[in-house]
Amino acid sequence: MRVLLVGAGGVGTAITRIATRRPFFEAMVVADYDPARAEAAVAALGDDRFLAERVDASDEAAVTALLARHRCDVLLNATDPRFVMPLFRAARTGGARYVDMAMSLSRPHPERPYEECGVRLGDEQFAEADEWAEAGALALVGMGVEPGLSDVFARYAADELFDEIEEIGVRDGADLTVEGYDFAPSFSIWTTIEECLNPPVVYEADRGWFTTAPFSEPEVFDFPEGIGPVECVNVEHEEVLLVPRWLKARRVTFKYGLGAEFVETLKTLHRLGLDRTAPVTVPSERGPVSVSPRDVVAACLPDPATLGELMHGKTCAGTWVRGVKDGAPREVYLYHVVDNQWSMAEYGSQAVVWQTAVNPVVALELLATGAWSGVGVLGPEAFPARPFLDLLTAYGSPWGLREQ
Image (cartoon, rainbow, N blue to C red; front, side, top):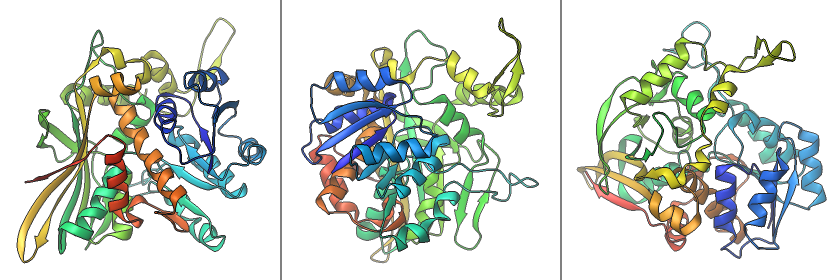
């Protein structure tokens, strides 16, 4: 396997640190718009299977040419969701398998944004599914931690733990703190704004997909391994769009443990229009310039990849499932916890980016060995869960199951 990894930020760099310990691939080309980031990621490894390149992720032709130049048969997208479609299409043009950790962007319904879906997450990719299938090509979409591992948990529950499923609810929470900062997101603020301020999507079998207001339906969820109770709210996320395509459940939800202060900060950004992506014109010493307000917010905040030494605590990603097994009600929480102290000591990566990064590497290894295979545009729940969970444990990062 020869991999083109596009994106050498926090998650991309963590991917290289995890992958260098595994023998399943022949080469990994690490490409970024900023060549210094790609070069730094490669130089830190001392592994001649890795090399650095510069590429503009929005330039389909350049990405396709890079795939051909290095004879890469897989494109792994570690950029933010703005670049999903050009990279997705470049992989298809270049004859490579495609893997991402997020899906093509949504657009709210123009008249009823908090009731009806407009363009849903992943719609643009699934619109091209027939083309991929007819070509015998594979796009594995949403293969991070959430979406990704959370979807694998859902498939495992459906296959091995339940006869009927009432609800599949992804629940994400943490007790992470960052020294010296009043507000310092542990993941890309660009992506965080996108998923938290868009209308959340809920699925119900008798209604299909529909939307609610941001931060709706608050509930307190008790997270394992000492994290404890965290208030969680509805947030737009890919699992709600992926799980019902392959698994049968009466209801699918995603709730994020954000905390009141974080929610209020996001609401303030929205009130001020600082969540917008459309450029605005502002004065500068060199005359008027066009900038995206959201990009300005991101530039003013610390890079999450640099916060590891200042972070303390654990992050938990998991899937809560309730239904029936052998005629009796059952309720479980399948989860994966990463302690920041461990991930920094073992990999030099903070917990949230490491937890995101490990899952696509596991998926690549399953594709390389043939344990996972398929054609078309597929989510993680389209594949058997047990090989993934066994390999994740073999990577030294076990998962847990708690009866509720």
